[in-house]
Length: 576
Ligand code: GLY
Image (cartoon, rainbow, N blue to C red):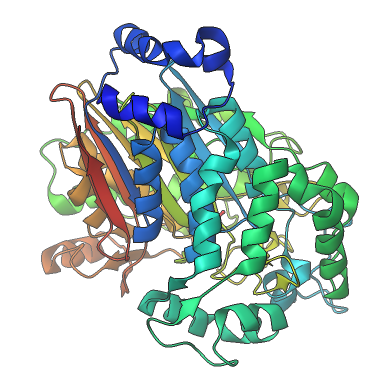
């Protein structure tokens, strides 16, 4: 760490009186870092940031260079992505921030997932004939859950950051006000959601050029969003969930056919939850707990894989075994998982080795198990919505954050005068048990709509730890998020670097449809032939996901970072 740089920053940047400064005082800040290093052996000379957008990465980098820690960088990046990547996440959406703090060596998952409004009910997306009306759960204000991002930003900054919330939000506020140039991906996403965007006068005004798709290089300025972020910067979450802003949001939602109330906003709280921890052959896997399904599905897969001998098997046999474990774990996701604040989920049992041994007992080494022969339940398919970023700071603090507004540009509806683009995360509930949603999701009762409940997610921010390396990773991509993180974790376990983890060609199985999906290059002709002979059905799909990983090599004291070549993101390593 370059002390002279940081000392300058202490003068320039307002260090808040958080628990660190209260205990030690700002003047002894550096002594504190030195102590932390010796206690935790976490001294790094480098830091790393990888996000889905170059401007967000640059903002994260700046915060780290200017005295912020990984959590401050995460706050700044989350807000910046809300400005430049509104198709992936935003302050009208939610997310999970997996945080490791060196000061206490603890991991915690900050759950800023959206909640169903209190007026929500089980059959709210059914028409008069009892059929699911997907348009209602995906487009417009009725599709929106109560956002969690603004509350999470305050929580993260206050509980774990070194900088004031206003300091970390400032770059995003400037970016919203000054504007940014749209790229090809932004335009593609707009095109995909054009009807929903056009249905909202405010979204059209902000994102389109005279109601038409903008050209590459068109500058999008978001003054209302800058003002709303400024309100959060000055007043914390109350600036969003209470007072003038809350009234504007509730009125705007109601006028557009939604059901939010002031009570919904005033009572929104983030929850600090225990992550799910599992092991795979000497690698510790720390990942998201409920209401994300990611950690539990991964734990089941890794437990099954750990007890299945994989050595001396051919490529195709190994792929077969991974697919069979995915099939079984995704089946359980559909049957058992939902918001554990509202339903009983047997988490302990699901993540136990004894259960995995039972589950894997009928895996045949040579033949695919037809999913139809397993007890039938729900499934979900992938998407390219959502966003992820990974940060490790010079002190060893780390954040893996996966954030979402669900479908690209969420519900498409922007509340007039606020710059807040609403999510359509309500579609992650099962609108009717047994009937697929727009992604092909057939939900079970465990994920049915209940007032105030959080909808089940697949977002899987993850830490991996071996004897000499720690990886921070995650990706967008609907239910395929979990299989992508599993494959990247296996690659890391084999010694792969950040670049090989994020760019790895992918395959996926999720129980139903009973099909292996694969990207071009993920399987050889020989693999395909052999897997078909085992009874698998396969289909090649277009590329999916947008993974961002940062790896700390504890032995070499170096950082390695990479952003997925499928996206437009940027990874940086910050050296002394
Ligand atoms: N909306 C994507 C997810 O939470 O899984």
